Amino acid sequence: MFALITTIENEDDRYKVTQIYKLYRGIMLYIANSILHEPHLAEDAVSEAFIRIINNLEKIGTIDDHKTKAFVVIIVRNISLDLLRRQNRNQTKPLEDYIGYSEYNELVFDDIAARDACDKIAKSIAGLNKAIAIGKRGVFMEYNLQEL
Image 1 (cartoon, helix red, strand yellow):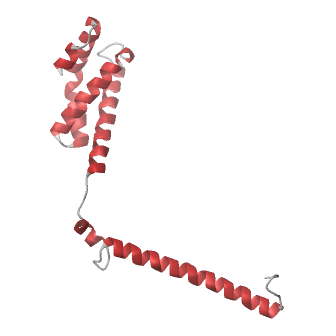
Image 2 (image 1 turned 60 degrees about the vertical axis):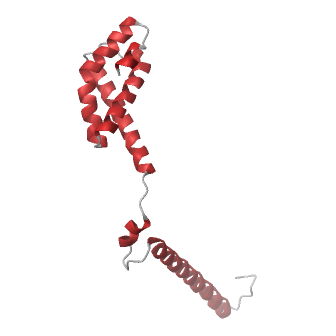
Image 3 (image 1 turned 60 degrees about the horizontal axis):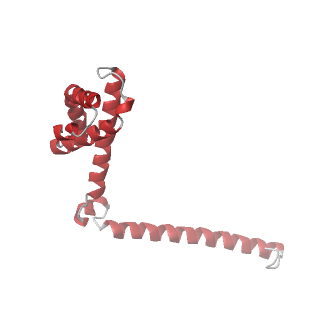
């Protein structure tokens, strides 16, 4: 992290980032670890947060201020949540993990296909009942096909 801080050209900005790092690094790690539950990912989140803080340094007034603390906490929280989403999106589970989902211990895809087929059959029967009712009305009322 200090290598990143040394690349800042302005001495005042470098001092400000160093003080933010010293003051808020612990709480940033705590928040990131409470969201991610993995120390190495929490370190990554804190590093990414400091890069974002450096890019938005003009938004920070005084260092030891509740607004600065809230700004830092929000940044590390959002980055941690992004990392968590990215991690969950990239996870894959074997198909065997989903077998317990079905009531009959069938594969999930078979279960979904069976339910979908049942829904289509029920809609077809409902449509058929409606057509029969219209047909009966037409016979009793002596309508022709155009009037139905």
